[in-house]
Amino acid sequence: MSLTAPIKIFSGTETKYLAEKIAESYGTYLGRTSVQRFSDGEFQPSYEETVRGSHVFIIQSTFQPSENLFELLLMIDAAKRASAYEIVAVMPYFGYARQDRKDKPRVSIGAKLVADLLEAAGVSRVMTMDLHADQIQGFFNIPVDHLYASSIFTPYIRGLNLENLTIAAPDMGGSKRAYAYSTFLGTGVVISHKSRSRANEIGDMKVIGDVKDKNVVIVDDMIDTAGTITKAADIMMDNGAISVRVVATHPLLSGPAYDRIEKSAITEMIVTDTIPLKHASDKITVLSVADLFANTIKSVYNQRSISSNFLF
Image 1 (cartoon, rainbow, N blue to C red):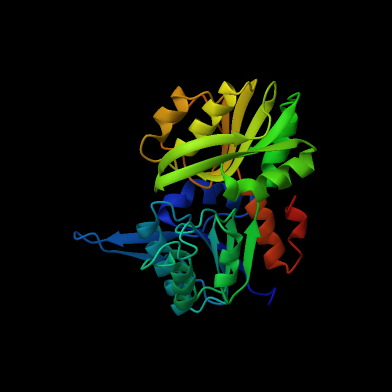
Image 2: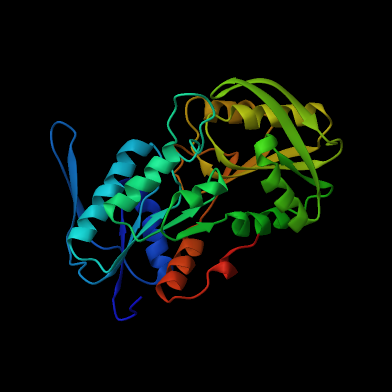
């Protein structure tokens, strides 16, 4: 990698709110882009400054994944055709990550398809945070920098000074994450076991472990309709918990999520700004990932290790 090549940071349309903070934290400004939109919905992004010979970092989370993903692909293609030296897709939220395997017959593996599309478009490297499944990194044949929001969340949790703290997983799939948090914070672990009749619909749920007289923090990678999280919180309170808080990286918060959160036993929900909130809530606290991504971009550009940005 040539350090004589300049660095330029650009943003997709829907992630400009975060990209501006990342660029400011890095000590630079966002590059100029524009998007031409046609009456039938087709659109064409373009760079309004030269990127020839530059290290181009394109910041775009792919929530509401189809349009944002395609805009990112078009921006990668445009940078490649404009002779960028290297193109890095910075995807704070990686859409389609829940489609990481064939869990029933005749379905696609959407995460692998997205990886193939990014590589076909011409990306040199991908930077993302808290993938729904770690093995998605193996879907790529290019470097993937997988960041973790634990370095942001754990200082916040410690700052709450909660007595009898216990970390909880909202389901069996989140047990590895919960154990990592509990080991670092020196707490116990409980797990919610659920049966799901269909996507976004919870059947039966029970708590494995003791939550009586505990301040519980449930950790997860994303919250979509908030059905699992709110039901787990209510059950834990029914089992004698003092309070229940939720830590989740990606606040998708679709459908009835906000209403469920407001009506639930959750004391506080702590999320990051990888996805913008649709509207504010007194129960939701947002922590920014801007400094973490800016530091990682700086390390990648200067060919330094990024492991110091990982807490666990």
